[in-house]
Length: 169
Image 1 (cartoon, one colour):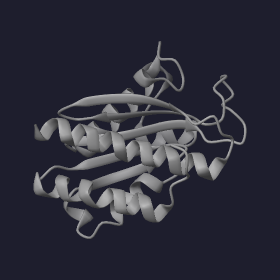
Image 2 (cartoon, rainbow, N blue to C red; image 1 turned 120 degrees about the vertical axis):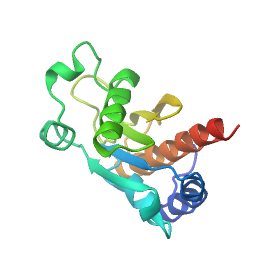
Image 3 (cartoon, rainbow, N blue to C red; image 1 turned 180 degrees about the horizontal axis):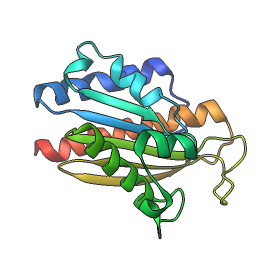
Image 4 (cartoon, rainbow, N blue to C red; image 1 turned 120 degrees about the horizontal axis):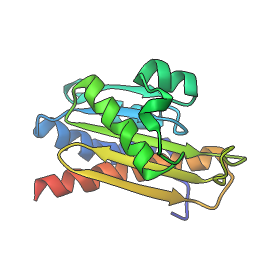
């Protein structure tokens, strides 16, 4: 990912994904941290989003994770922070809470500094959980906060596209 995407490009990326979800009569929930609502905004920018978008939360803080997802320390025991297993757990919880076909979750360190548990700025983990489960990790190598937020969102939408493509075959 050399160039930084714009919100407009994220919205354009979400159009075929929203159409696929709507046509398949499937739904999605979102739990996002460092993307700060950009994923939800992109998915909701598609006309007719109410047919597939169940809801989302910005789980940027521990308090939000507790309050919005109902996650406690015991729910993530043994899971390394900012890891694929942890983000998958967040997606599983969001999917169950909103009774959706799919859930997309993101955890990251947008910058300009890294996470307090040692991950550098530009680090992100993503999960899509549904009929297919996919996880991935992204390292941009950049401390550009907004640029990373947009790149993380782009990668999350790409992961959703890959999951939907897997289900379509």
